[in-house]
Length: 268
Image (cartoon, rainbow, N blue to C red; front, side):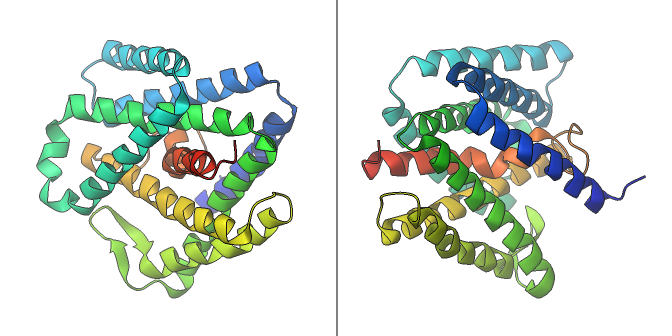
């Protein structure tokens, strides 16, 4: 049997080329459908975190998210991005106050269901919105490079220098030192982006910092939901990684913020 670390490497080695191929080769509609299916996979796992009382309830929740995808697709994305930014501001407060509100999280089934919609649907809309922008394929790849680099830097930096816990009650493995290492990747990836995009380096660095900080929030928010549900992983579909939510948790928060930055900065 492969150990967990080797499983993680093997799964990533398969998924990353598949994503890059999907990003640059798939048609607009194919990209919509495949990313939509991934979103519904995430909805299935989210229903598990909600401790749904039956299989029928879990299926009904996935159908609800599917309907939400179609409904919100028909509306202008800009107002939704601002609303999503407000949601993640509230999420930051909930993460910071989790220890004193843990009993609430064990009982708030409807609230967690609504939150799941806000976590998943805007992320799907955002990545498809970004892909359709001028240089959208490159911008979306830039977003993923930011998340991948920050996640790797946080992991290895935390292992090497980690001492002070970021939020021990939610995610004991995360440290302030790892968070600092994640932020250090922002100017590095921004320099790469500066070579390809017609934007100022300062604006790229600022957006990169904000995106990375928001990606950490997405990670912590999902960790909070898993802790409230009493599970280690959101699922078992990805060997070495857990479930799909464990892989896209950072993206769920980062993608809408990144897309909002495109709108505010008039990159559209």
